[in-house]
Amino acid sequence: MTSSRWFRRFAFGYGISFAVLYVLALARDLALITVYPTLGVILFGAQHAQDAAPSMGSIPVIYWFGWTATAALGALVFGCCAALLPERWTRPIWSGWLWVAPVSAMVACVYLTLPWFRR
Amino acid sequence: MATALLISHGLVAVALLGAMTHQTLATWAPTRVRPGSFFERFRTVPTAAFANAIAVLYVVSSVLGAIVYVYFRVEISRTLENSGYWRILGFFDLKEHFVAIGLALLPAYWACWQERGDRHARTRAAVTLVLAAIVWWSFLIGHITNNIRGFEL
Image 1 (cartoon, chains in turn yellow, brown):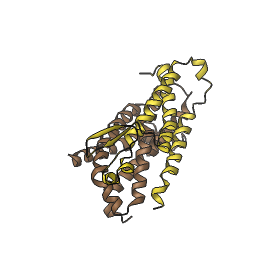
Image 2 (image 1 turned 90 degrees about the vertical axis):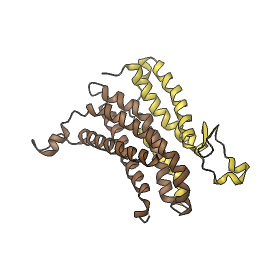
Image 3 (image 1 turned 120 degrees about the horizontal axis):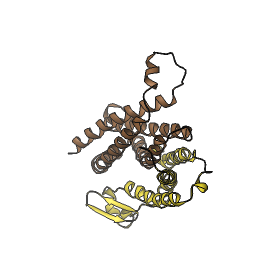
Image 4 (image 1 turned 135 degrees about the vertical axis):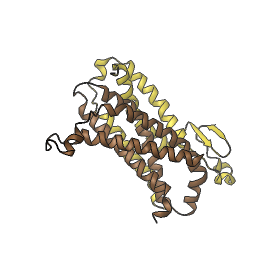
């Protein structure tokens, strides 16, 4: 089984752009959805209910699904664009970005997570 | 239910860790090793054959992890916060981020391993190493978090 050329272009574009977009979503708090698991509620966008109602600060909230969904949606667009581009346009692009982008994103995630370690 | 899911998640993670480690070491190992040695037999496995299994195991492990994560946020993380386990919570946050990045890398990883020839050999090896690092980090942090009372962190 071999992957077709368009799938390879899509996969490379998706992997690289997801890493970049995930860090952006995390840094700017661009969650597509906010999940309140104990209430069984999913809200659109990054909702910080405890800012409006401090009593809600004790209710568990999940943003990770939202950040991932934001990055996945954005990367899907970039991946499809990369798949539609002619091969002669994408061929000169260095394939090493496929590991450089995720590693850079991981380093950025470490930086954004530092506040946990300063408490 | 949560315990059954966590154990399933752990078992899938063990299988993934084994396959990922074998493929990574076989990919990065030097070609000049003593003939007939354990390491020579170890590195001569058909590394491409691992790609499908790794992709499936990574997806299954991520889905199970995402379900267990809801239980973690509801029942465990507040306890860890109240007990002052900030570093563990930070490490666990990194696990979430790394797993998401790795999941998005999976289609490209799979495509790299389907390719004949050496055109993307270096990229393939590097992506495999990145995924292996993510899998090892996730495995270790998951287990440390699960057994936090025994670690005195």
